[in-house]
Image (cartoon, rainbow, N blue to C red):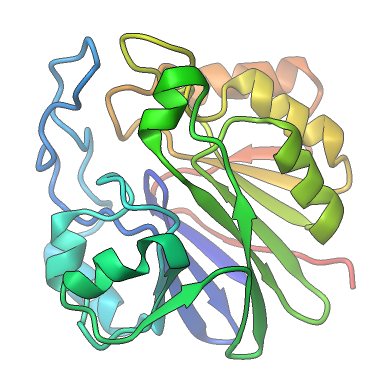
Length: 257
């Protein structure tokens, strides 16, 4: 398997030449405008995609399916809705499938628990997008596990660390865990995705797994940048286990078996 970070939470997972695009935010820098309930005047996304529009179109032509964890605009924006072929297989939690159909997509595959697709088992996992009233307003979010006979990759999605994440790790025993870092926080309430402390908890709970950090330096309500998180990881002695992906970086996911 190979994994490439495009920007924010937008990932391309390649398994045996099958390309799965995850949580596409494809708009230009600033196209989402200011985010509500923040103290920031910055326009989102904060950075462009790391390649040209022409290259983006070429990349989309090679995509075999799109996976969407939830419908927040930094994971599924109007440009993605515009550019992605309406016949593209869209794999998503059942709870959001009707909304995607209403957007004109004709091959939406809702997943309530598990799907066997293209020689992979794909599982829906739980998530918690914040706490208290803010967490409730953020709505239901999910993650995904992609599992083959000998490989298991867990994309946590937009979630803080909490007991159910530990349970998902126990259940699927992933060798690679991709987390949303950055400690995104609104003007009230606690962080809605993982802080550096949360990321360290993931590493400690799954010491045999490699942890990859995404969702950094692309949206205005994130409070922790790559440098800050890297310093925390190094201080905790986790530099050989936890890695921060750069935009456009592609990695090969190594597996023991």
